[in-house]
Amino acid sequence: MTLPDKILIVGLGTTGIATAKFLHSTGRQIALADEKPEGDLAAAIDRLKGIPFTGHFGPHRKEDFLAYPMIVLSPGVDTELPVLKEARQKGIRVIGEIELASLFIKEPIIAITGTNGKTTTTTLIGEIFKKAFGNVFVGGNIGNPLINYVSEGRPAPHVVLEISSFQLETIEAFRPNTAILLNITEDHLDRYRSYKEYKEAKYRIFENQGEEDYALINTNILPVIKGKPKILPFSTVQELSEGAFTKNGSLYVRLRGHEFIYKRDISPLVGIHNTENILTALLTAHIYNIEQAVIEDVLKAFNGLSHRVEHVRTMGGVRFYNDSKATNVGATKRALESMDGKIVLIAGGKDKGGSYQSITEVAGKVKALIVIGEAKEKIIRELGGSVKTYAEDTMEKAVRKAQEITETGDIVLLSPMCSSFDMFQSYKDRGNTFRRIVESL
Image 1: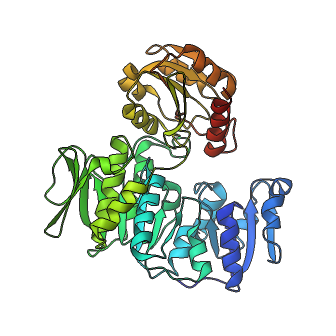
Image 2: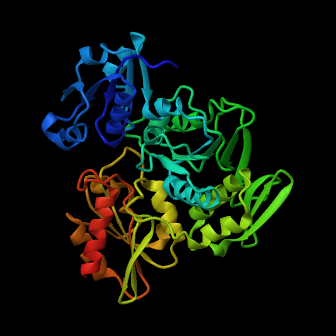
């Protein structure tokens, strides 16, 4: 696809800024649009010093969106905005940064999506590939926009990407050589009209794949695949003739007539969810013929990521864990399942439109529930009858209530089931706040 001379970029976050810098380097005239007022965007605009642009900040104006032959969206921008619908009707091409960047990439792309575990799996695969091949780009939704890889102009043998459903909404020809779908549970129902629509966005990761490409899919998912990839399943509940699975405390990969076996306890990561993450990493590594010794070295050293069931402190026999990255019910269920004691769960935040009732399936592990944030009344309505529940106004009050009601052997787990934007700047800010309070007890 030939890029036009003038392009509108919507969203002035990290991805939008990176996109603007790249397009300017190619000689394109750029325009910017963001719903935030200009005063709130001062820091972002400052990062574009030396780059000429036109733009409008504040409520979107139709005339801005109809004045350019191409619009590039940042991941957080709702693709169903009326101004974007009208732009498409007028024949204006609307794509995302992932699609734009992929037009310039010839190297093999490994793309990981799913409701939970994307960042852990992307990072783990990235570490394995870095040890095996040296220079490897790891980015996408993980925080390093793919367009940066193109801008830097330093080819790597492989590109490893975390891809969100939002990013998949705006692809056209994006084609990963290896695509991974870890899992799907209800999420982002404040953005999508239905769970079905959310799943369909995830399935798009496969739609442009050909027969020489690979699709790694959890056996408990039955996606609708429009592409023609070679499907490799992974499972923690059944043995497979080809793919990756668990058996008798070990991890197996069967691929191209070969079998590779790893002890599960070679990795310090705990829980069934992490077992699934590791299985996909093993399977991906063997697709690219990485030696087993290299993979084992990385598995032994990889301790996981901050804000993902992260042990903060043990005090008075009570363990405190920060799982602030758990922004949906499925993630919290997995965290609860991985724990081995009675749990005081701190949850709540900005509601994302789904139901919390599936937590009742593991309610027997929860000694008490402490809720905070905008969603606390809804959580109390749905879960208050299944577990002793307290409501608090701040994170500090929640942590101190948890300390008050725990005893030796208990666990305090921050695993919110909600986004953080009602009380915090990000899930990282929320997790760091929890950590500071716990460390001050």
